[in-house]
Length: 451
Image 1 (cartoon, rainbow, N blue to C red):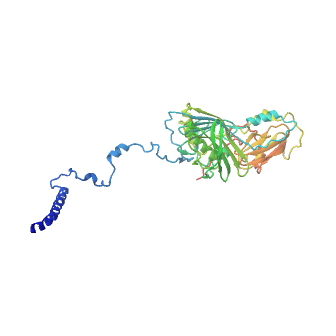
Image 2: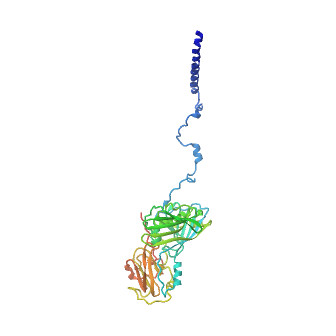
Image 3: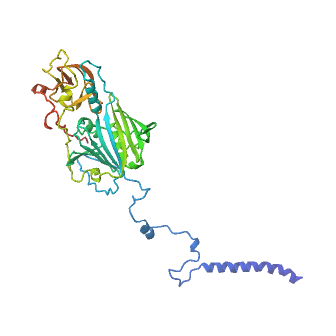
């Protein structure tokens, strides 16, 4: 009886002893031997947390070595604003594939008032003159991010053949002389006054977002329209989706929106979009239209003509390429506006014959006769005499962009038209418009820089 009573006690004691022995053995198994070297691994290393990194991983450095801007996800640096007093660095980028787009485009005035028909008017001659009186452009857009916009008509305020060039990584343009011997930097905000007044004054640019105005088709491509509103007026921009244009179309977009007072960083100017039309309606009245007549894809652009600036051109400051003559039509064409003279009473202070035009204000203007731009009138000029047959004409004046204009008036010839206050030097003589670049009618106004 006593032996049986002691068995449960021993049975309960055995598990306790065995558990204590296993516990002691487990502690000893985790102990590090005193003679263990620093390279001996821990038995539980695979389940312990990794240490925090305190320096670069040599294996990753070797693997990730290389430029950080080469990947698709790399963020490009924003373009650098140009300064007129700083030459652009040499354009040494390798343009192996000169692929892109070529355009034929023009500026024109959609709001020119036409006179009523007169018996003595030569209708055919006037219609031909109006059709030819556009501002033609030749444009090349390189997919690699280059723009060349050449003035292909003699009617601009700048010399025919002058070129605006641009590249993606810069805001602003270089204006290259027709012989490519020199260039001037047109900083952001100055493009408008350069094309409008042959000056380099800077105007403020607005950061505005375009409002969608629907979709359409143009020149065989789908297009989208945006409208921008600034203090200067409204711009309606239509752009075609042309993948072959690459980055070149965005540069033409920058050019066009800046004319309307919009900063060239506009998100509307993006890759694979090419402007085909831009309508400008100014707050103070007047309008002008940019429109594309042809658009062609090409892989044969001339690399040297895309360099911005050209390789051998010299940087100049404070100069702009002026046209050689104030007249936009020849004397024979002017006299051809009428089939025969008509009897009129000469106006007050009229010359003995012809029409004397005097620009008394500080804006360069165009003189229009019967809706035809016939001459450029320099600011505060001494007067320009047009050899017109005697009779009655519709005469008006406006700036290139059309934002300042003198409404058309019926003017007798011999006669005189003055815009603004007549300058004192008018009495010293008049210009026939056929002089050299050094005459008063064709001397460029000095460029200015606004800090």
